[in-house]
Image 1 (cartoon, rainbow, N blue to C red):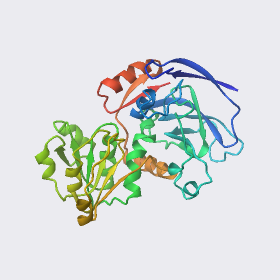
Image 2 (tube, rainbow, N blue to C red; image 1 turned 90 degrees about the vertical axis):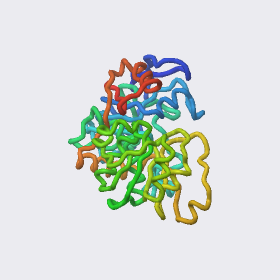
Image 3 (cartoon, one colour; image 1 turned 45 degrees about the vertical axis):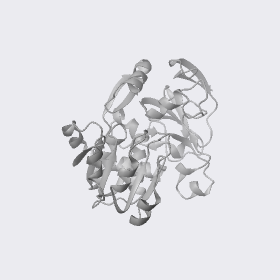
Image 4 (tube, rainbow, N blue to C red; image 1 turned 180 degrees about the vertical axis):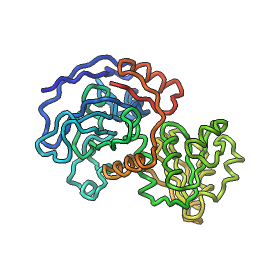
Length: 335
């Protein structure tokens, strides 16, 4: 058995405190990662507060891990101790269903969440299945790479999966932890990129991230003037929006895709979809193979999240900033 030193919350209102637990003997297809950095995602906060009704306490959050392989199981052939790797929202999948066999392991109905019913990366080590333990290219910094394994792959996957083309006009709703990465990806993809944001005064900042155009998402007349322009609009927000304006902003055959976990239903009229053959869709993260493609794309184009770093011991300060502040744009804990 291995003893893990971690930070855990005992209930939905408690701060994170030091917490030790034991890992059993490693399984034949498992990997133990010595944590060096771990990003903090809004999903960690949702799990801490049990907003989704599936949290088990004590909870050790953390699913944007970067570290080094410490030990591998007897059947692991692709990784060895010392390898630099990352781990995201998923730490396992069944590997026998049609989704897993077809390369869509992220759609496995038995998928194991890194912080769902088990302990995550706010710790000195974390365990996962080898297929979800992804080697990190040498040119990517460990200090900033963690958020790529959740926020990054969440916005990269639909670009690839839905065939966004370099000639497309695209929009990104919400320029935060997810959106600031989406701007970078889509710009390097070759698209004409529009940022829909409630802070349109940050022109220089958004332009540096990859936006060619900026539209004030709180200006109804500005939204209506975008009618029929976009081949693809990616929504990263988790709050209700003027969805009809964004649907009308789509060109014929355009797609509105959401990766933001909006708690309220999205109202959709049939005729705006039917008459222009538009689509609405959503997606979770991406498969292991898509994650590898994303990391290669980031290495090629020098794409990285903008992060604020905290020592792991200051995890509660970091959570406070995420919950009540405005981090620019992701928070990373250093172990």
